[in-house]
Amino acid sequence: MSENKNLQTCSAAAVTPVEAGAFGSFASGVALTIGTRLLMLVGVVGSSVIVARWLGPEGLGALAVLNTMIVLALTIGSLGLTSANTYFIARDRKTLGPVWANAIVFAIFGGILVAVAVVALAQINPALFGGVSADLILIAAVSIPFQFLLSLGLNVLLAMDRIRQLNFLDAMAPAFALFNAIVVLVILHSNLKVLVSFNTVATVVLSGCMLWAIARLVARQKERVAFRPDGRLFKDAIGYGLRFCIPLMAAILIFRVDLLIVNHFRGAAETGVYAVASQVANLLTMLPGVIAMLLFPRVASYQDPRGEFAIRVTRHVSFVMLIMCAAAAAGSFLLPLIYGVGFADATVQLLILLPGVCLIGIESVLVQHFTGTGLPLAIPIFWLITLAISLGLNFALVPVFGARGAAVTSTISYALIFVLVAGYFCMKTSRRPGEIFLLRSRELRNLLVQVRLVSPTKTHE
Image 1 (tube, rainbow, N blue to C red):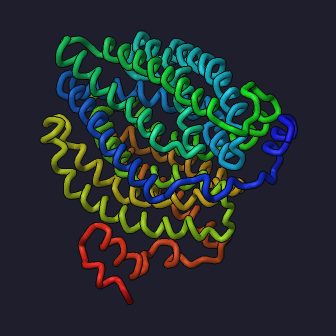
Image 2 (cartoon, helix red, strand yellow; image 1 turned 135 degrees about the vertical axis):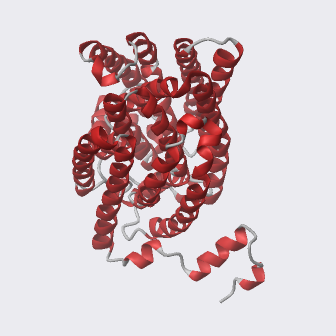
């Protein structure tokens, strides 16, 4: 088959799904990725504790604002291309070369444009970033094109089922963050500006590693399309990505913009406390996030209209999320001991967040049935409705109740998108809620066997 024919095939709506053997074990992939994420927690929590102890709530709040700025810039500026690349490669792996070539060009030019826009916005309206200095914003903005490259590359590795490489490169970011915090703050006794500079350099190094890893992957591919940008493929990817971009952008705004609103109305100190509660909440979504990430390319490849695989996975995630959130509620009282007395209100804020965190974790898995089967228009509409309500509640509650108001808004928003997506899933698949969310007795016993809580001999009904 000619190269031109390959490109036409991958760009068409009906692409032949990747054969089942192209993906490894789903369970082993989840186990490996979760193990890696647990190691990443050392870097994430360790670096935040060091910043909190050495720079106080104000320093941690400023760093959280910078990190949020980068996440929002990547989400909005990527135009959904990260997920689109995963979708197209998962359905036809011969497109790896042109997809990655398009991604490199997009990361360079798109990333520079977004970085310039962020710096310009900080100059035009400094109030959007609270008390964060223009110098810090400029240093952080330099990393944006390289962050684009890393994000696009991780999704390419996901589509190719290179889970070990994905986990290794993904884990290096929090490892560098912890290393930099120790060197800059503990050893050199320096300041936040130097720490942000070190983190930007680390991003540049990691993006170079990503280029090398995927270049080897492209070179080893036996059957492939030439490694060069392809305009038609890029157009199709952007077309899919823009649809995907709406729920992705809305989700990130709901998850992140509340911290900026707290910073704007209540200052960096209260933002630093809320950043701790939000960070723990985000950590609880790590497991469903990993499962959703690995589920997406499989759904895109297999095209299961009844959602059998997604339902089976969602039942297990529902059970595990309940246990994790209950444990987090008990452990929330340790936060002031870990971070310091200045972070006492993080306990209350986390307790408010937990019901919503449980629901959004379940939703993030269930919705992969729709993202992997073409993403119906209803899903972006659901997210836009939720975003509008979230922003309205944040601007109404945060000036009065501060970070606790932001936590209440988050829980309401998470619950709303869960209800909308779950209801739509039931309508489209004619499945009852009990089938989707309640673990069956045999599944529960098998799960308990796997964690060695009951004897294997008792698993037969």
